[in-house]
Amino acid sequence: MTIKTVSTIPFTDQRPGTSGLRKKVSVFKQPNYLENFIQSIFDCIGGLHGKTLVFGGDGRYHNREALQVILRMAAANGLSKALVGQGGILSTPATSCIIRKYHLRGGIILSASHNPGGPKGDFGVKFNVENGGPAPEKVTNVFYERSLAIERYKIMEAPDIDIDTLGHSRLGDMDIEIIDPVSDYVELMEILFDFKKLRGLFSTGQFSMVYDGMHAVTGPYAKAILVDRLGAPEGTVIHGDPLPDFGGLHPDPNLKYAKELVEIMNSEVAPDFGAASDGDGDRNMILGKRFFVTPSDSLAILASKAEKIPGYRTGLKGVARSMPTSRAVDEVARYLGIDCYETPTGWKYFGNLLDAERATLCGEESFGTGSDHIREKDGLWAVLFWLSILAEERSSIEEIVRKHWRSFGRHFYSRHDYEDVDSQKAHELIDRLRGQLSDLKGQTFGNYCVRDADDFEYKDPVDGSISQHQGIRIFFEGDARIVYRLSGTGTQGATLRVYLEKFEANPERQGQETQEALAGLIKVADEIAQIKSFTGRDKPSVIT
Ligand code: G1P
Ligand code: ZN
Image (cartoon, rainbow, N blue to C red):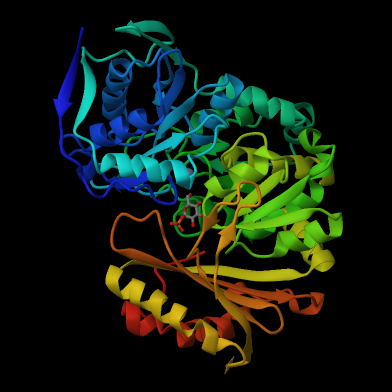
């Protein structure tokens, strides 16, 4: 086997976004595109000799082919050992778990998370660092700089590696171990949660749930835990086989894309609990019988009940949420007397807080919840957390949430996305808002008077690094808020995200339907940002 050095020229668009480098499959399939980015990573992370990296992905189209290329490049670049999820499969949380458990140098995850797959869909590459979390911005910036200067990459000339059979093989000097993608993760869940108690919940015969794997990576994990370990009946896991095109589904667990699950949960014969995860298994959606739990409320409720869960019995050190996430968890933190951190959008910003033991639970409004057990958000972990609450309280999800609102107040919350809008117009909209910030204060729109407005800037309390332009925030009297930002994960045009939030302390007024409760604020959001005229759309493409 020989090592080949191939000359190449840089691509100018390899700057990682909110979560790794994400592009259309057709972009990744261009000659040298994947190779350039992988070589840029290898060039920046220092010597690979004596090191181990883990490799896997969400099973989407191009996963297996890309993995073969990456393994040949890893061997050519002197990596000593590669752990590879069997079949090229590893969920994002499982990868994080494995990096931490075996003290690895890091890992490469092939995924475009919740974006659609297939030949016309998206593909992505994420690098996770030693703590198991996504590479922070200062690291991904270095990858990007490198990608702009790259002149060659190294690859081993070798036949395809068998990635389907467990065990060891060699590629040049590199040891390859094909590992079971599920077992380390399941072991960690068994430490955090009381599986005996959860088995008790299913064995009553009084409790039922449906878990939607969305034909993405979590099916095998969910079956191993829910069916094999906890005794849930076969059929509990739907869309459980990972498929390269996700069976044509859009693997984003929300009310629009998890359509079949939502229909089941809204039906007369709905089970007690419904849940779904995304392409790579780090997101979660939680549903009760005809009841949707917003991810922001979910985080707050988990925080308020964490001490009942074995893994969190000693209490929470603090909590953290992304800025656009509702402030429901802030109320719980105040009640518990712990710190609550507000970070920019993207899980990578939680890493330092978790490492420094300042936060134990973290969450984002975008269906992401997690804790210090790993350094990624974790879909099935959230499901097990909710199951544990249900096993403890034996009441319905709806009752649990309504009770929470009565104690802490309700944060009516919704996100309106305008997808694939003209990129220039979207930037103009944000620039215009930025220019207006100082004039907005004191102005009244509808029933809402602006108390304050800014362009969110974050100073990491651990390493002091500063991240600017993380979203336009407009605060109103009476605790309402609108946030505007552009997505950093899209692959086509721009996506404008508008986050709407209104606090209601009075239990008598907490029963309203969300979009109705927010109707006035939705109008104000358009009036201030001129959304219709900039985007040419009269309604959002997705409402969550
Ligand atoms: C979106 C979400 C963000 C999440 C990220 C990766 O990023 O908004 O919270 O961390 O996906 O799952 P965005 O497209 O908004 O930049
Ligand atoms: Zn994801």
